[in-house]
Length: 104
Image 1: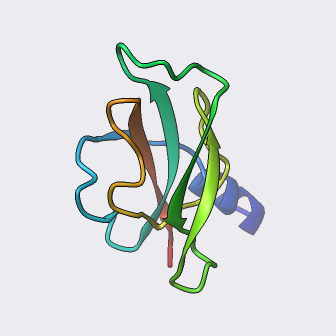
Image 2: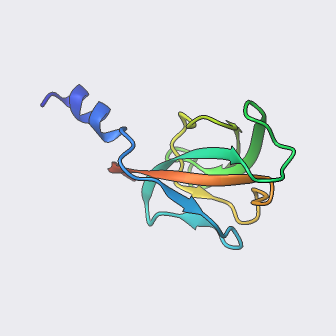
């Protein structure tokens, strides 16, 4: 397998986990992940809306930065953490997909 094929394979979504608690910073122990936001039942949020929240990225220098995410599609951004209480879980359901081979 070439290096490019390895990178493409590493970016494939192989498992999905729902985040049901953001009272503390959320991370997957150093494993980067992608985020999918879906409108929660009874919410006014719609597919196509943009939700911005503070998150840590692999190259944000260990700092939280504001990241906009479009509701209803997998974000192309790689995350390493979501700051506590940044996303209102009554508005959107949050799903993450670990990128197994991309560990910071």
